[in-house]
Image 1: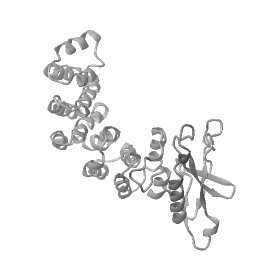
Image 2 (image 1 turned 60 degrees about the horizontal axis):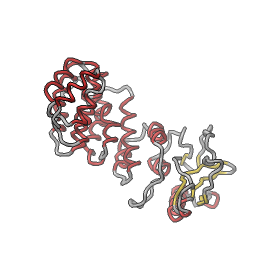
Image 3 (image 1 turned 45 degrees about the vertical axis):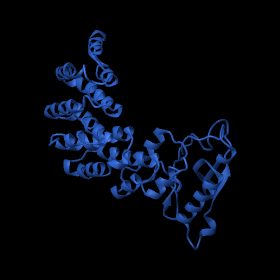
Image 4 (image 1 turned 135 degrees about the vertical axis):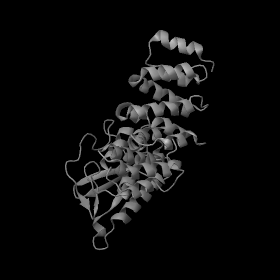
Length: 316
């Protein structure tokens, strides 16, 4: 799983780990160094070890040679689930996978300094969607992992959980985990992935004081959450929710950091579709003091002559 090829790689980074059972097999990792392939194979063997039958369950690292530019087995989706011991190896279909199995699928090593195998985002999101039933304590364990892929998977699982029909009380554990572990949600794309549904979805129709508190935070990504979560209100919130979100945008309009003022511009752009009058009021109040990149995002959907008027007024 993932995007890896031996083409252009150092010869020591062209090893795969294959899990076999009879005449069937699954490739767990591609593009590893030999030492890491050996270590991953050993770890999986330990996970699957059964003293009575361990001799029949083995993994080995093999050199990876592309076949017509494709990974072995590419294009052949698994049609059956099968297990070795109690661990399923059909990632795409099985709902019995544990955190350990997800970790193996993501090719996460114990070496925090080792760059993990590259993985296409659509593949990562597919893994997260397949495991949206993962218990929250295991999601939190993934958030603690040093690799970006593991943390983004955890955040994506929270997002997929929140997209299911849930009551306010059912959303609360997702919301509380997101805020409690915001220190591990430490890139702007993690915030953008989960904040609207996990935070905004929980707060819609309720007190938005937590967003005001986030907007006052010294942590830039917490301030980004404060203005990204209200994107949920644009489509699903009440008029009161959206009005309060504009108030939060007022608080952050002159934030000096791009990770915040660009998010303000994105919110204003989308919110203007539902409340054009409030969008214009915001722009009249802040166009002269907003950072120019944020302003450009905020006016992106306006008519060209109106966009130019606001750009001419911008002093930053």
